[in-house]
Length: 307
Image: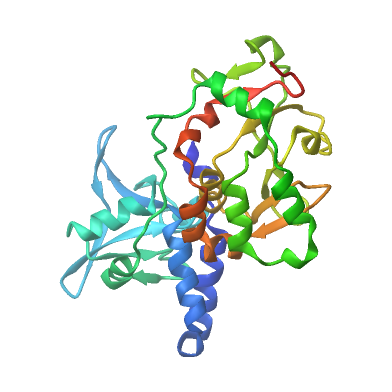
């Protein structure tokens, strides 16, 4: 199940740092906790009856009701080693709505470890939540997406990232990305060429491939300025290209606790760390959320095959 892959290691690290330093903790650490919470996917303890969920597990403090949240299943099992409670995972938005609607006053995070109290004020301080539902309205068709792939020209972006004087100029980089067509690498243990029609593999009925994660020095999502750059990646798996909405892959990297994104690994190696993505997330949403690409995640392309 999905919840068994939930980690939130970065959130947990900042919470521990904040609690260890307490009064000496910097504002930066606290605000980073808020950033991590905004993009988190947390596990909640629920009450279970005969074969169904009957409610949310809560406790009362000073006459106010609080729920239990966990960064991962290991923390949940510390809380409930006998399996008396159930567990579900939701995006942070769900828990914020519970507080906003008065169902609970807040939550305690990892009650057997950090015991970090998420009071109402924390939820009220967090706004502009990331988008998780990418609606297909007015999106490109699969044929239009392949046409974009076949005609992509990222010379301006490639010139920008090759110029060392542009290092650290992230807003300008994201503006360049917004005017570019970028690919990511999808891989599969099976040869999927037989599923292709006109070079396009649809994943609308079932996921046939999965996102390649670069694991050198961390766990990074990858994007590429051309299919030639994808050829630099060495993997025994079968490779396919996919156009990306850069805002969407950024939200994925943050939501799934990756260390960041690499542009053109094994060649340009432009590393956008998790801290950079968190710091510049509002600019990324502003510049790089091309909603016409919302359905791009449902299509892969045979590499090198043009119209």
